[in-house]
Length: 168
Image 1 (tube, rainbow, N blue to C red):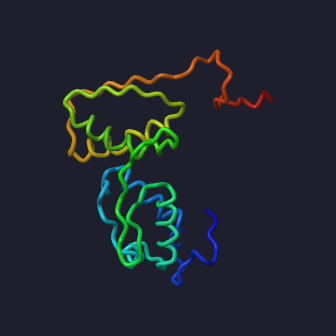
Image 2: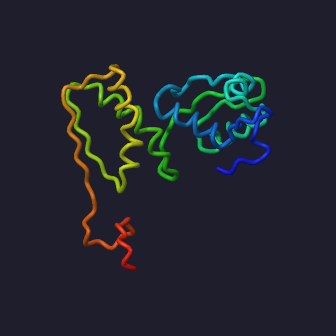
Image 3: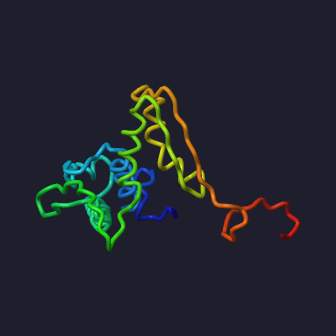
């Protein structure tokens, strides 16, 4: 992100953008800290929490509404976290539905996770919250088995490869 004059506070610290605030709230939803039906704090409370103007919070909430993550948006009443109801026409964001299921799966004594992904980043996004809860001691599985399905190198796909400086 480019730091511009409009997102620098008077004291010189950087203010959060609406996109950053929306991402923080998305993370809270993915982690299960905010669940379907929960009320968000008021715009004024969120503005205080993030140290921004209410207009910035409104923009962040609008982005979450556009993503289908908020419901009951009306003037004077804080919005609620929406139920994620997949439809055949519109796929829902994967992590919104996946994160709570993974936390539930990691609560079992024996955990087995089958993963289809192309990057470690994708995998870490999916299991980041359960791993954090294990480190905190909130989850204590006896064993964890992870199988990762990766595509064959024979398939022509755009995968990162090491560059040795030989021009290839």
